Each structure stands twice: as structure tokens, then as C-alpha cells.
Image 1 (tube, helix red, strand yellow):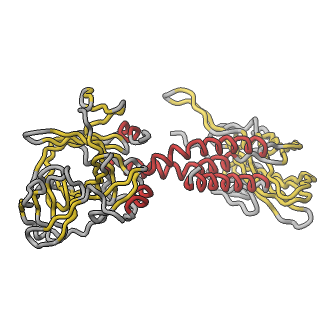
Image 2 (cartoon, each protein chain N blue to C red):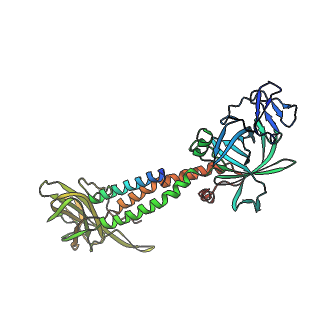
Image 3 (cartoon, each protein chain N blue to C red):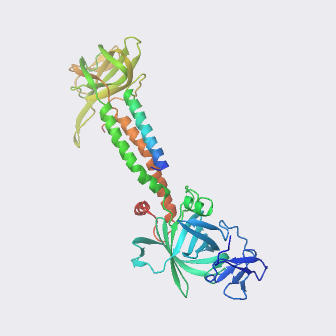
Length: 446
Length: 48
């Protein structure tokens, strides 16, 4: 295959190695890929600028590698490592004779594609606007220093070169201003997906963020998209559950029973029935109403006893009502009505056995000593009517709310992870700590 | 629909299936009574 016209070969004046000059006519500085010596490619005699023998980079994308990114074939021609004192990142210079230069910026295993802007962004307060997209300030006034370099560049780059850098971000994008005493340049970089960078240059996919890792300034929350995608599914499920609650919660065929009991009198036991449950397993609802209980309580034990198997299904209600006067005025507490829901009674014929005992509380009424129980009991209290309404079926709203909670658990977990991600990302930002507005801004689409 | 949304939809369907099964069996873990029942009882007003 014929060599591209833009590629020319040079001999390294330091080690004699043959170096390919891939962007001939554009490249100003070239680093020998064997010994790391920096060479002035514009000098016909190929003058050495500086030696950098310590450089032994094991590059993720070896120089000379070609890859197709977003439909354009690029060749990696230069590589440098930069640091601002606390973070280190690598920049690979890509070249295409028709498209010019791009940067591949790698940090923490994440890759971004950088494009130099030919015009300065529009300023709007502290923000910068490029193509209608707003970028908010993130870092300002950092000094980025070149620490290692290899390959070809379009300016005279050497280790130790410094620029002042300011970064502006929006989810998925970073706008960088780099300036020194002579010039300033703007670069907009877009975070690449693992699939894109792997398909183009066969590098390892970026690591998935987990708590404890430091995300990039412009890295969008990986959980925000899930939250946005999942909410419609959660809302649809909620509506479906409402429909199921309405369909499966009805009670039917109510039967009413009543008995009366004397306060502090003996326990009244009574059996009602038969109560037929024809199908499978069913719930039962028992409403126990004691309209006349006052300054006392009524214990109501309800048992559904299967006539065939003698299995018993029990429930208990405590109806009580108290009232009085104190310095704050009238007070009352307790409930004269209770609704019992009994779960999963097998099909069959049942008797409802009810044991009821009523008690009086307080000092009103006539009191007499009962020798059998050796306690004082009130006398002359009117009997208390106990009305029981038994119906097949029950609406368990607790099941509904439990199901809603189970449906919400995954999105809520994603929300917590999203907040943790945004807090970790924004902890690097200049200015105030992250708040709810920042968490919401992190939900914006790239 | 991406894979995570599909899995979440599957989770929601499973929850609804469980709900439907419990509803058709008249079951609730929070029922007032059932095959075995026990209740702690306390009497009297709590008004101070």
C-alpha cells in the first residue's frame, strides 16, 4: 500500500531511529518515539530541541494508530501528559488532512473528544454560551503544566510548558480556556461513550462510577438517565396498582349480628353462623361497633372456626372510649368502632365464635367488692350493645402501599446514587457546596 | 427501551404479580387476624 503523501520520514539526530512525520507541513515539534528526544521539525537539519530520555510512555493509543470516530478517520500523531497539581490527564492529538486536528483527552479512564473553537464563546454573566448551549464555571485560574510529551504537534511543545486554564461545564461537555502571555484558545470537549472510544481505538471502556470514585467535571450522572427513564414506568405501575386495588378490594354478602354485654360482668360467648366461603382462599372483614361504650372498654375476640376441620382463624378488637374535663377543657379518646381484616380463610363453612367482655374505667357508678375475683366492680352500668357486620373480602391498603414502596425502591436508590455522584463531582468545583439545585441541574440531558 | 428500563419494567411486573396473587388469595402480611393471632393488650386512657 502506498504511503500517504503527508507522511515523511526523518532520522532522529539523537538515536538514529526512523521517525514518521505524519502531518508534514503542519507539524512544528516532533518527539522521537524511541528515545523521547524533542525535535524541531521545521528545521531542515532536524534540530534537537530537548532530550527527554526518561519518557517511556506506554500509550493507550500508540502513535500512528488510526481509528474512525463519528465517521471520520483520525490518526494519533501526538501525545502529552498534563497536570494541574492535583489531577493528571493525557491528551492525544488526532489528525486528518481534511478535518484538521482534534484532541482525545483521557482522565480517570474516561475519554473526551476536544475540538478547538475558531471564535470565542459568548459571555453571559459568569456563564459562557456556545451554539446556544450554556456552560457554567467549574474551575478557574488553574495552571496546567505539560509533564511528558511524545509525537508531533502544531506548536513548539516541551515539558514544563504552562498555561492558565479555566473550565466551564454542562453535562457531557466541557469548555476550556487556555491562555498564556501570547495567546488564548478555547476548546470544547465532549465525553465519549465507552462504545464509541472502544470501536474507534480499541481502548478499555471507561469504568462505571461507584461511590468513592472521583467523576470528571463534565461527566453526566449515569443514574440521572435511569431515573428519567424509570419514572414513566413507575407511574404506569402505580396506576395499574390503583386499578388492581379497586378491582380486588370489594366486600360482599354482609351479615349482621349483635349481642349485648354488661360492664364488669361475665364474658359473653356466642356463636353465629353458618358463614359460607365458597371459593379458594378469601379474606373476611368484620366491623365491630359498640355505640354506647363510655369510660370503658370492650374486648372482642372473634374466631372463625371451620366446621369440617375445626381450624380457627382469630382476630381481636378493642373498642374503648374515654372523656373528661381538665384545665384545657373537654377531652376524649378511643374509638367505638374497629374493622378487622382476617387473611386467607380456606373455602368452607364457618362458625363465628365471639367472646366479649366489657369493663368500666373510673369512679362513676356504684362499686361493690366481688369476692370471686377479689376486685371492686361497678354495678348498675347499662349493658353495651355490640354490633358485628361480617362480609366476604377485604381491601388491604397495606398491600397496596407495600407494592408502591417496592416499585419506588429502585428509582429511589438511583436518586441516592445520583446525589452521591453529583456531590462527588461538584466537590471539585470552585465555590459553594452542592445543593438540591445542583442535583436537579445534573439531571439535564447532555 | 434500554436494558435497565426493561429490567425495571420486569421488576414492576413482578411486584404487580405478587400483589395480584396476594389479592386473589386474600392475603396480607399486615392482616388483623389469621391462622394464628396474638395481640398485646393495654387498657385505660393514656390522657395526661
